[in-house]
Length: 254
Image (cartoon, rainbow, N blue to C red; front, side, top):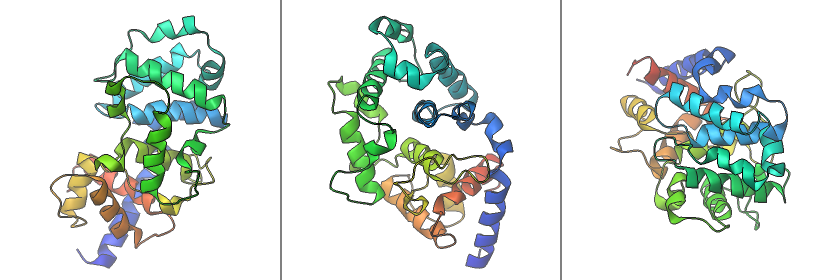
């Protein structure tokens, strides 16, 4: 496929899937229940971080978390009592266990006690830019509190060569403009041009079929490679093509 043809196909599928209809069966519908930025951040964080496996199960389990938080995630994170955490003692999503859940709550309680937005956890103090630095910094901040070693596997990092699909997905939701009614655009310190595509096995398979990569397995360098190639068509917003690659994989077109 020639570059012009590829651009046309990617734009076509981006327009098809970057619309409110897409929300109905996607975990992003959960933060769309809220209007307060912090509620969107927290609901979106759990929806993205648990986004592996069947989408209906992801949605069911994250809705369970929000219900345990009395459908007011920010108020719960700030003001809950120790007794309230017992609600989560039997919560499990695949390998995400109660101890992991309790640490996530503990971190968010601590962090929001000192910050108005979770975006600040992605901003290195020295002002270094670049998504690699942002994600490495986030993991360092996230695990700055006392935690069990097993919980670390649930937050990815480029330092471990991970494609960081779930964090990249979360950042897409928070950073990309809200003009089509899908993403939120509530974070302003990070620009859409900085984003890296959330690359999982499905997106990776589509990217290989379109000759955007020759790699056998997705990792951080591959996610950067795919983003750079599709970014030539829209450098100010390369993650718009996440909708295209995901949509094409969903339809089994490649």
